[in-house]
Image (tube, rainbow, N blue to C red):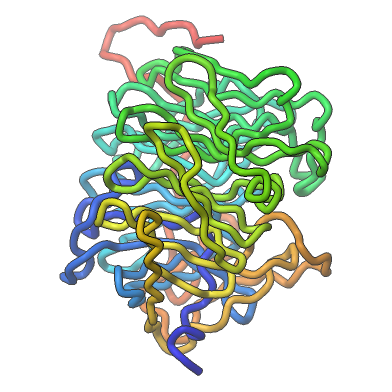
Length: 445
């Protein structure tokens, strides 16, 4: 088996670039990982036995760590100023796992509050103390953001409204005081698994929240006839504007744009040539901005396509074919992206020159081939191309895996690979934090 075959498949959305010493999901900085030069890329993957992992690779494709997960992960966040990352469960999962990307070990498991589940994304405050997670208050059918204190074992201290339904990705804006939240607009309930319950009345939005108290600073929506364009993934451009990748839930014959830019006014939708638009198959997967802040990459895994856009002009530039490709992240070099596919390929691509460099990853023993997910698509990709019965999900240490892992165990303790993971403590929520003697302000909305 070749090294390329041994990589396992890397799930496209979770691919993030960071520094092994200061790994910041927003800043996406190149640095050192375990003493090695270059960037660290982190992703979720599924192995040949349908077990789920969070995996770190360097810029050459070498595996730096590989940790089992109890279920499928979706995306990650990195804590500023600490050797710490978090991987969040895919909807309707209720777990997150904190890990050390430098030592390659799991640290603790975090569980959603009763009546909530995660939507797969999170973001930290600038100082790294507070974690905000997109969650579903599924009985009320409203989106919320859980607030946790990272300095106290990720104890939940409060909850904010997302001012929408189905919040997905959230990002800290460059001002350090605002959270941008992509409200997908789709109502779900864990009793119905991943069924979408309100497609006729869905109302996606891009909301901006005050980090200090959760007040709504801005709420931006699409035109009524575009209400089935679900706003799912976002990225911040060098100019401070927000780029958007969307997924269409309407008639498959509708020729709808899937990429947008919000510059403080309305959300401007970007048009691709008709043949490219059709090939995207109404599904924008991941979105990333290059290190220079001027190029946008949006993947369309259903169409085996990665598209590139000029951020300043708001115009389509080019595209490249990648079989089942969806993972995109900026490299340390402006104008270049790292791309992964559900078939286990990893490549570096420069859209302006069209240069493609395939990486030859090397993994630990037992680092197996990627397999179809529960929906029948490789690497746990969302949106079935093939209809197959769900695969069996299980959790446990993988051969050749170093460090701890998170698995299923009795409620009081989670244990796997010989490592017991402490759980975050729960107390009565208290947010926003206030000085002693200060009166609590009423919650927004």
